[in-house]
Amino acid sequence: MGPLSPIAWLLLGGAVFTRIGFIVQQPPKLREALLGLPVLFTVVIIGYGVVFAVHVGHADAAWRELVCPLLILLQIGASFCLVWRYMQGIRVPATFLLLFELCFSLMAGFEATMDVTNKWI
Image (tube, rainbow, N blue to C red; front, side):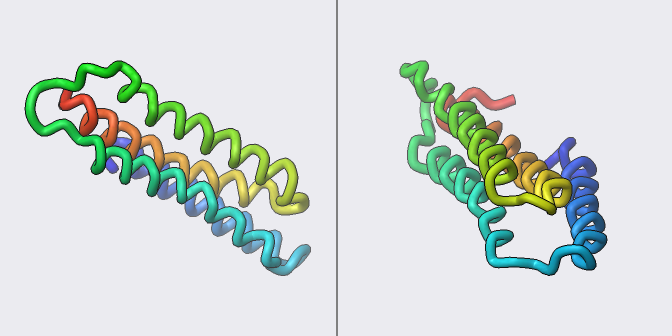
């Protein structure tokens, strides 16, 4: 995961420690399982990179480069809607956890974009 590793682990730690503080006020509920949904965007990004990988030459279609950033923007929008609509009372730990998931999506999107364009750094 490269340069985002320390940031991602700090975000996960923030999510865990703030949630521990909120447990006294609100016990965990089933709605917190919704926080795992944005991980599906990461799986789709990785799958897109595998299916549309270019092994020889460079990709001609410019749309290939735009799919991963679009999926990441959709993940940000879905995460915002989850926090705003369903996570009343635990918004701080939910935000930490969703930012942790976003770090993985950013790195997956970076790798998948290089995969589908065959332009490696």
